[in-house]
Image 1 (cartoon, helix red, strand yellow):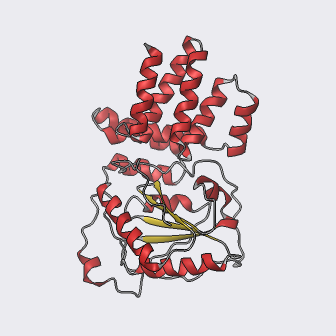
Image 2 (spheres, rainbow, N blue to C red):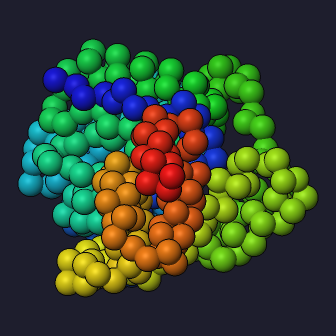
Length: 317
């Protein structure tokens, strides 16, 4: 039974940043070859907690199918092999990113995986749940058709070149190149990819100064600020502090950032809106400003933003 494409799918994801991978991770990387992903070659890029940011950036050009598998699950290994075959048949319109769940605990948690295998797509950095468990090839193929439709509606229409030594056919050669980003936007994305969120924010601020109507830069600045606030903080640290210090506004603001970064958009909004009436004037102003920034991160056309904005207005007036 697939679980593809929830009804609250955003209308436009271009320029968004995946916020599920923002929490500080252990920098140690495995060096042995045990537990390597099954298969290989073709349009496949293995991923783990540390390399996930590169896959996020790739998803701005082409949809990425993230498959959480485990070496102890033969079914999950078989599914990855099937996914590889079906992704390769799309000749660069999709990329497969297998992730060993045992080596990627942050990724498992961020994607809210309840079972192995779990398959989630990334479109412009935003997670799109596909399915859990093993599925027949014909079902997966239909899901991929739907995924490409979603990607096209959100401006993700690129194609990666055929791997060296393999031919992608004439279709790949004739695929239109994705329009390049404006220089300052590209500078910001490059800074985000290397974890320099202040440099990204600076690039976006410059873009806004040059064109105050640059909505993507305004949203990008909000996203870069969020990335910067969460940098160096662990999930457990944030949640434990919020639980132990319920009266400390900074702790509640951090956990709202964390909730939104993991895709729990309504939880983030509700936490701050529930807190709002209990605060003094300065605290209310801080929460209002944070909510307005988070609205930009999610997208002002998102229905959840509309609902939260309406509730905030009722609290203010």
